[in-house]
Length: 70
Image (cartoon, rainbow, N blue to C red; front, side, top):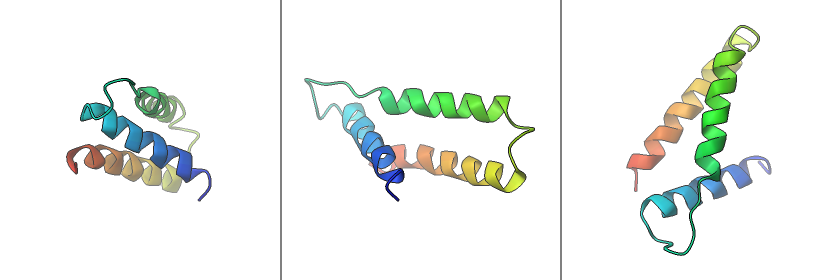
């Protein structure tokens, strides 16, 4: 759980940024990490166990749904 807390914090900051709720700051770190994670999954697809790949794929799908929930 402790490793998930910074992730969800960064996601919330990103959503704040998308809604322009913080005019003084820009939060792009989360988007960059998601892009890097997707690239890593593509590169390592043969080395990732199938159940872990499916879990990560579902997680990324949920990630995209969060953007339309605000």
